[in-house]
Image 1 (cartoon, helix red, strand yellow):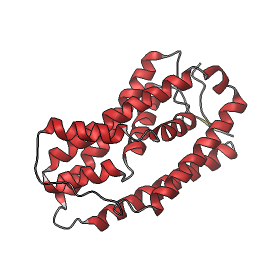
Image 2 (cartoon, helix red, strand yellow):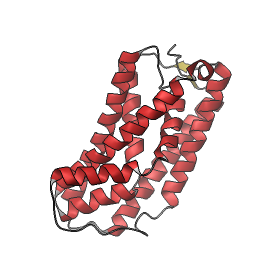
Image 3 (cartoon, one colour):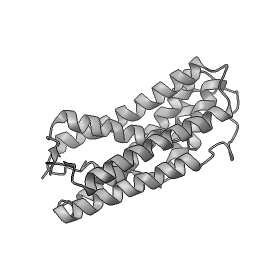
Image 4 (cartoon, rainbow, N blue to C red):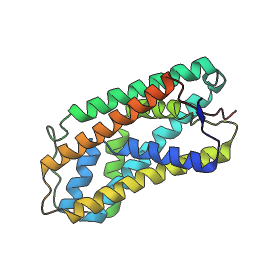
Length: 224
């Protein structure tokens, strides 16, 4: 018998935070930049870099949510929802495999030691992240898998988007804290290890969700 997830603000917050972490965790150009700035300039410069990246991600999250809300009547059909959840799980799986196999340090740009202002560090991270619209596909996958779009419940959507931002900031805060604590032992190989750990977790998570959806081990609620 399927286990049903009940609609609540807590559900939306947990899903939003998970989406925010999934969007921020892979060690792409901004992730590497955050690590380098933490090591070269200090923890708060790294964290502000993460804040800039999160602000850019939120723009793409809003665009994705707005676009999906226009076709919500089609998305909310049981057959369509099932197929989208399967597609979302497969996309997450592919994303996890790519993350695991990639070497983010191969084309790594060495960050300078000149600190600059916190605002400048945040803005540069914002525009670097904004130049990568492929994050939209990750948001589409996670929004579909978690049935995150709720156009008839704007308050819950606002809470959900705030949770996405909170999850992203939590990731960047935790990452910069960790790098700052082990700065004497951290090098380029550490970035690769973090990326492989993240990729492995995404692969495991996507497989659990995929099999759960295929074999109807749980049901997600309709928000309409």
